[in-house]
Length: 253
Ligand code: ADP
Ligand code: MG
Ligand code: MG
Image (cartoon, helix red, strand yellow):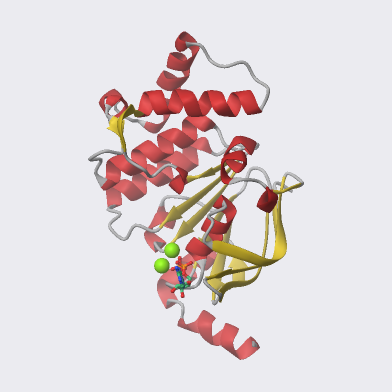
């Protein structure tokens, strides 16, 4: 098992938000986490990222058998967990290229691999640029500075391609995401899928799943996964909304 979340409880400023999450993710799988607004999806992604504001009050998260919650956020990244919002910051004067050279070599050092020299780094960049269809111009600009929503997404997926994470967690929270941005994210996820990695896509958007084919779909409601299924579940949600799921879950408690 790549990721194993057991009975995870977390709170923010004393309010319980996650109330017993159980989730198992194997290498090669894409999982979609959906659910009504306020159900705890972003909280789950933030807890996996190690954001400080969230306090884990019970449960455990094992990543490749290691206790993920014990690791500092940057060590989680070095272990091969990619969280899209690890790098949302604008860094004036630092190009994406320079930023990524440092990030890639830090990960390699942590894994006991030789750093990439300039030539090898450029080769890797070119290969990944083709894969995610990103323009060279974007990469020479200061990181995220003045990027449009679509450019930020493209850049994020490019970072993911470069860092080759074992587990990627993408929280698609931005309500301003247009159809282009949705396509960029989904193409990236589809192209980077391999038998050795896994992706968890947290989304408010039904439409994202028109492009990404998840192996599993989970519905988070009131801090718990109340329903899991395959792609068909997403289609059912598109048709029927969340009310029936809320009613089922409320009746069970
Ligand atoms: P989702 O991503 O599913 O929309 P979130 O994880 O963002 O849900 O939020 C889950 C719940 O946690 C919501 O009820 C929200 O109001 C609450 N919450 C989020 N951040 C805070 C905070 N800083 N303080 C108190 N409550 C918060
Ligand atoms: Mg929300
Ligand atoms: Mg959210």
